Image (cartoon, rainbow, N blue to C red; front, side, top):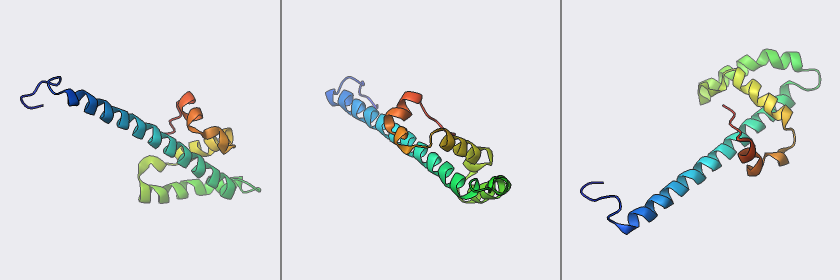
Length: 111
């Protein structure tokens, strides 16, 4: 702050608490949304590429799929990351287990 001490204005402490609380809520929300996104990506790839005898085809097409995703969404979709998303889906096939309590308890961070 300019010439003011941090504690000189009573509202400063309240504003700081409000900002920090909002930051924490945003971080939790983003983590939960990303976790669900990665789970759904794993589910979709598993469903369309790895079931009904298409596992070999799916494994072959995964690098191509990753390359397309990288072009549109950045390097977070290198082949190993969609592979991790598939494994995540396979480990947690039932979406009801992926609520915020599950995410917070196990500190899920995919990438």
